[in-house]
Length: 217
Image (tube, rainbow, N blue to C red; front, top):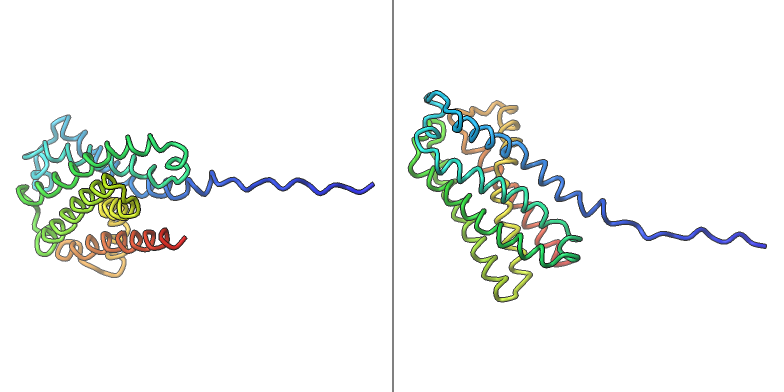
């Protein structure tokens, strides 16, 4: 008698499939928690100070921005789970119809605050221009991604939606670029634009890598 070889079970892809969405959710947590705290402070009526005057003086776009950004970043992270897209295409389409207006609300409210809110001095210089460039870039990516899906150009749809999400997630990456900027002696009061732009640029670089990797895999 000979011993039979042990059966080889196929390797489960469930855990790897969740790694990217879980990482994106974690990256979103700092801006999501900060936004929730901001909305809560507006709800209870905090005292107006020079640091929060731009929020208390114009609370509506702040609330729209926080709600839109939170929904977009957290729900959008699940779109990066390949198993969900394959097994539940209807869920992918329905959640996409939610994500597009949430992303547009996030971008437009951010641009509104950039243009009309009383920003502090260290938010000046190049930073407002950068916010306009990336905010308009996010809007364009969402519109182009939606239009590509309508035309059933799914590779282009995927690419534009990844770019839009990368810009939206900049608030999470900017936490780390700001810490790195402070670690090398950067002045956060006069050069805030440097780590902010770096966060968006890193996200977009990773997005382009992911897009090209998907085309060749």
